[in-house]
Amino acid sequence: MWRYIKWTFRIVLFLIVAGFLHYTLPHHDIVRVTNTYNRLTTVGSENSWAYAAPDTGTAESTVTRDIRFIETAFPGGSVMVYRNEDTGWVWPPYFKYDSSNLQAEAGNLKSTAEAPKWVVVTHYGWRFPFLSIYPNAVSIREATGPDERIIPYVPIVVLVFLAFLVFMVRRMWLQFWERTVEPAAAEVGEAWDGVEARADAARAGAKGVFGRLGAWLGTWRKKR
Image (tube, rainbow, N blue to C red):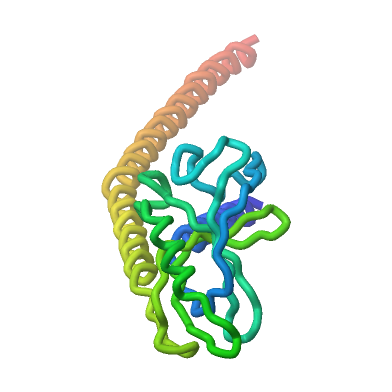
């Protein structure tokens, strides 16, 4: 039972960490910009975690905000809508303050299906239509084509660093366990064995005393 509990905890923890990293780390999409616009958007308790802080960028209030959006289309025909918000100095640490410039760049890169101009949009976050959640565009640039190969250097470096950090923490924990916990447990075990040995000797001594006393009383019964 305890084994299943441990594995369940590990799996849940892994899914939480993986989801956090997938949401936070940058992704790259090759798309075609079809439209850019501003829209008053309601930000409630169910989706506020996916938006910037109320005092960052173009916030009207904590409930309704004037948010910039970028509409795009993938080479296969599917579409994606990005929000364009400043992140400021809060999480995630993209330190984005140029949403106005990014909106102008996206508007300048608009194209049609007949004469497509492919761009690379770097973004973070997820798209949940039923919660009105959009990925946040961080940067945009022209692509060499719809088949441009993009190597995600930042996620690779971050994941390698985290793997190294986990390895070092685990190594230090094992060394701490081997050098501190195991000797202490051994000392406690030896002390407990000593206590049990003394208790056994005391019981044996008590049995010997009572045995001799019983034998002496037995001699008196025989004399009678």
